[in-house]
Each structure stands twice: as structure tokens, then as C-alpha cells.
Image (tube, rainbow, N blue to C red; front, side):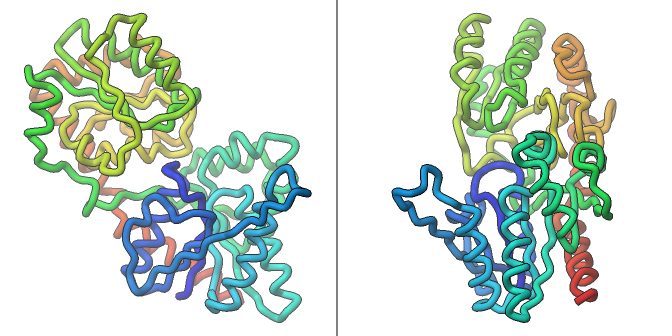
Amino acid sequence: MNIGIVCYPTYGGSGVVATELGKALALRGHKVHFITYKQPARLDFFTENTFYHEVYVSNYPLFDFPPYETALTSHLVDVVKSAKLDLLHVHYAIPHASAAILAKQILATEGIHIPVITTLHGTDITLVGKDASFEPVVRYSINMSDGVTTVSKSLKKDTFNILNICREILVIPNFIDFTRFSKQDRGHFKTAIAPNGEMLIVHTSNFRKVKRIDDVVKVFAEIKKKMPAKLLLIGDGPERINIEKLCRELDLGESVTFLGKQNQVEEILSVCDLFLMPSETESFGLAALEAMACELPVISSNAGGIPELNMDGKTGFLCDVGDVASMAEKAIYILEDPIRLKLFKYNALERAKEFDIHQIVPIYEAFYQEILSKY
């Protein structure tokens, strides 16, 4: 197949999933065209089957805000025709699905019929979809797509409830590439970070309020009261300054390390002992899956799609949002017994294997074929 993938090129979950999917499809012999305003962060290599088309937005003095959606629509029309695409797979409703639907309508006037598949990732429904200024466009784009997928049952339910969608939606979960995300021997790195054998707790996110990183720090503070431990925070964002202040207030000193954005996050995960994800909501919890693939148990909230991944009492524990005391208690329970910790790590890896990219990508391929068969 000749597939166009439209996504955000950032480190966020939707861009990561879209890019990793495209790379996997290319390795399976499909031609994959990435269409976005910047080379995707995870598009770190090119093969004979991958192509990148940059969307350029003219910055006319007339526009206070450059019309990216219009530029994307025009570029999609051009790429579909020049590359002879079989289908468009767009990730995130706004502006990608809406731009693809308009491009589809423009192409139809020229006798070119291109199916559009939309994958919903979370905040495009739970945040943007609730915004009255976007809601009619989000609903229309979903209803007019030829196929729609979500990354969890929870997000599918939210899509129906929030937008009153009246069409079929297929759940295809996020996936993990074990050729990258697996426990690596980085003993020298662990010795440098934890020279006295401290337990290493880790969290990774985009440092937004919804991630509740203050809860991460508070849980860690309770863990540290019971055992030697250090906290590694991977990522960056608007909440970082507040979290740094909280660490000083709790007198955590050198026990917390801010690592910023990291390209090789799997190397850090490989030396850690426990992953914290206390988010207010998560459509799936891709960061938790990456941690589990590196043999880390997960202490998480029970919000959104996380319970579809993290198995309470087996791969980690689920706690109510904001219940710092329970999260700390469960974390200590796992960490205080080496045999118990080893069992939870084993279970986390076994669970992650159920989301192996080689099992999930064929589901997308079958869905593509199903949609194309209708044309």
C-alpha cells in the first residue's frame, strides 16, 4: 500500500505512535509518506519506503495566525496526486482529520477518491472535543472519516459520550517496539546515579498539570522516608518550575534529578526500579507501556485507559487520582521485598509483550484493507 500519515511531529503520544506505526509499515514493504510541518521526532532513520513531505505555511501580514489547516489541506491534495496515495491515516482530530476530509472533498471533484482513516489519541476528544469552538468540526471530521480508531476502550466510550458520535469505532491499542524498548545492561549508569544502591523511581511526561507531577514528588518523599531512594524526572514543560519549587520545599535536595527531554529514554528506564504515573487522565498510558517493556512495575492512577494496561496487584497498582498515601503505600510494598519486586518486574514485562508492535501493526493493515475494499 501507498500510505499517507499525518501527525504532530512532537514527542507527544500521538506523534510517537503515528511515527512508530509508519516506520513499522515501511519495514513491512509499504510506502509511507509522513506529512507534517517538521520532521517527526521519532523519524530518526529513513528507508527506501519512507518519505517526508514538509507543510510550509506562508506568513502573510494579513494573518495574525498562519492558516496551518488550509496549508495542510492543500499539501494533502498535492501529495495524494503526486505520490498516488491509496489512503490517508491521520492522527489527532484537529486539525488533521478536518484537513483530510476537506482534501478528500477537493480531490473528489477531480475524480480522485481517497479514503481517510482517523485515529483519536485522547485530548483531541477529552479536551479539544469539549471546547465549543471546536466541537462541531471534531464531530463532523469523525463522522465523515471512512474509518475511525481509538487507542483504548475508555477513549472510545468518551468519544461517544462527549461528541454523540453515531458510527463504528475500532479500538486498536498502542504498541511497543521491543527492538528499542527492552531492559539494557547499563550497570555503570546506575552506579553513577545510585552509588549506594538506592532505589530508582522514575517518571516521564510533558510536565503538564494533567500529569500531576506534584503527586509524583509527594509519593517519592514518602518512599524516601522508608528506604534510600532517588527520583529521576524525564521530560519538560510548563509545570517544571513549580515542581522544582516543591522539591525545595520538601527538602529533597539532591535526591531528585531533572533530566529534561531525552531521546534514549529506554536507557534510563533500564536502570530504574519503579515507574510512577499519577495522571488525572490518560487515554492509554504509552509511557507506562514503555516502562513495563523495560521491566518496571507501575504505580498509577485508575483514570482513563490506564487500567486496560496496568493490572492491579500484578504489574503494579491502581489508585484513585490524588491518593498520594495509597500510591506511596503500594510503592513501598513492591520495593521493600526484593523477591516481590522481581515478580512485579517479570509480570510487567509479560504484560508489555501483549502489546508487541508485531501483533498490533497487522491489525492496522487489516483495517486498511477493509476500508480500501469499499472503494
